Picture 1 (cartoon, rainbow, N blue to C red):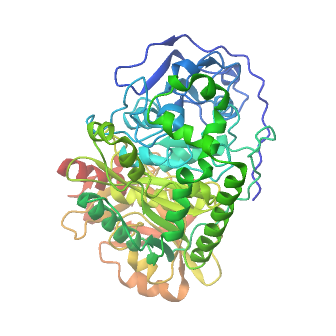
Picture 2: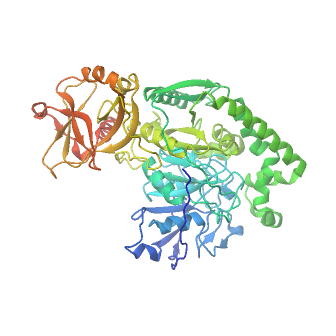
Picture 3: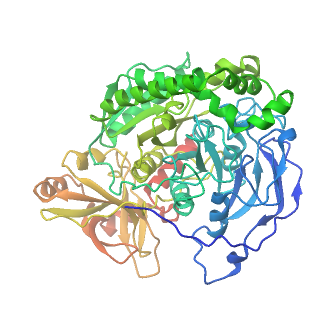
Length: 586
């Protein structure tokens, strides 16, 4: 599937007046009134992001506003919007302001800014992660619906993992970086932060577009079928958590959860990935960071804060021959990594191996920052896509996230699996405490018609991905087709005294019910009978009407069993209800 967007970027809009940054240090500047385009007032223009508010990292141009890259001496007024900013405005999103970052996007911790260290959304004594620190914070705290960051070495993933939000790092070149100040231009990506995978995907759909004026833009063909129901995921053979036993336990739990969703873990030799990661700062590749701001840096080096100044200055010491040597070494490591991909569908890693306090980071800034990138630096160098999703809340109250990594073009596949994983955790949205909404279909994935010799069945409760009875589907070779919802003619009840807990779905009069989230699976006909035989009363199989009007076999409940059951329809689905129970317990 070739993905190309042709858009008219002619705009007649003026940015609103900027105001002073908030004391939480997440904002560099806000717009007094959200910036919208004149197209957003026209009902004739399709605007898929209408009603959503967003912020952008302050290394992206916004016309009439300063681009500082967290360096006041570097600041300039942008004449035009960055290409991706313009596309999102044209799609109906409202821009609210620009966010703080590690200076020149050089760092993974969020403390390297003259505007102040951005706090963690759960505990301000801890780092937010960087360099897209402010962009992650304003999403996690509920100030915007989504935000843009950039990702060279993990800056679009680490802050997501440390703030309980989603960080989508697309395949390189999928989103234009024109109008974005580069860190290392050949591997830079614009990234997306959101509280849910569905929102991040919605933004990506509007942000995609080949840009001939961006030297590294590409026309990519994205895989349009989901990972198989039974998939294999690689896990590093040598895991490093730097003594953080809570993170180690959380990752072990993540492996088990992914296995419960149909995955098979395979230990991989992580050495090629780790060696590739070391080249980013430990070879002539670091010269690209110097090249990005060379005229300014040579004239105003003293205006750049430490340790950013020392890192960028390293780029001066290498020759062109050194760069070719480093690129050749990276190619060889990429070939070694390619051989490892032959036996797996995706790679699973911790988004960050541990979490540090702001005080600790300021005391040992280089080494602790390096540790945060233990599982991120190699991804762009080796041309992979990645998606960081929340995984758990640690006993110390800090979030833990995992990252799903796929080959170039696997963006929709990662989103589909990542969404199912995220919703299986029962976590809330960011630091807001709001439950996750119902998952949404990934539009970039084709929905295959039910094949001959199989039956399509919808599940609404304990058979959902990651739930206790999902294995009954996997064992019978069933394949997940899509996430969907019923027509608004059903009510969902929590059945009392069931172990594990189960819901009951009841059809009611038209217009008297709610749309209930579900998953649709294809079950081989030869195994369908044994599956149905496992269903206990008062549950059974009937015909459900979906929101799009189609019909499918699915779970229903005998009305007599619901007299003493709790009506949970307002939660929109079983996952959201179970998440609410976990929140109450916590």
